[in-house]
Image 1 (cartoon, rainbow, N blue to C red):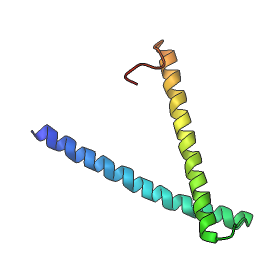
Image 2: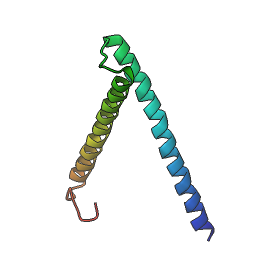
Image 3: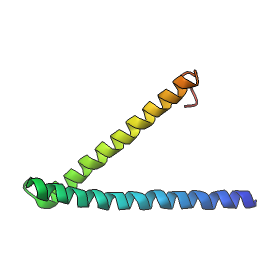
Image 4: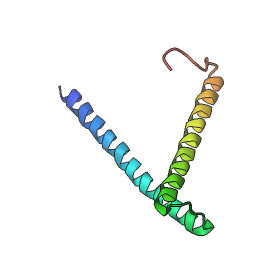
Length: 90
């Protein structure tokens, strides 16, 4: 019983870390996008729309880089261990 309660608390803590880090990253992307917009002087019709669009582009690029590197690490690890790359439980 104690093990189940401990696991439940750990899951909630992990969710809180995930959501909290996502919010922090969103603010950091907004700040970085603001710096890029001010440095390059690029502004569309609305400053806020440009800011949010630039932050979304950077967040999408970061997600793509992380996802692609995870796939490369997965394939490399499987190849080194001489295992099939894709299995039904993957």
